[in-house]
Image 1 (cartoon, rainbow, N blue to C red):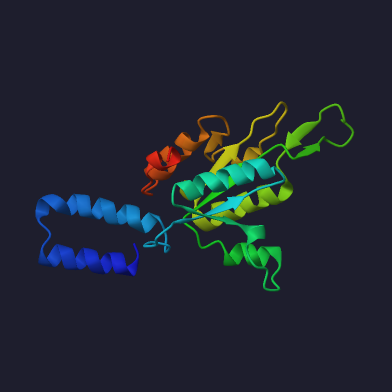
Image 2: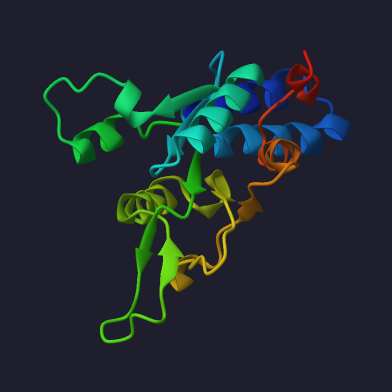
Length: 190
């Protein structure tokens, strides 16, 4: 738990917290602490990892903006002379990462060109691993644009994949809410 959360919890417990509210207060503070050191902020920041599917990237970013979330798209941020890895590290102070798995590349095993598979870009797989290590599995969500012969890296099969279909915005909202973010789904229809 963060220092400020422990301070407020201790003060509330000692000064005015009634016993019947102690469990609720502890649960609420635990959920807040899981959001990371970005809390409290006006708009939770969501890092969008993407490949070459610009339409998918823009649809996700605009949807997050409608929900009063702050999408972070790396190439939209100033370079300031940094390498890509340095920029990722500098902008990784986020509440969540949403990784867009789209079929941008094709590959096959050496000597077996008939076994062609579609894949996400290597940078997308690398950044997925980075954010799993940085944020933990509970704060990383993959939006999967299914395609025939799309290959998902087997090392990441424990990660939550949301199909990028008509219902993806509502499924994403449900997952973000279950992970502690307050989101008003009505903002999608405004």
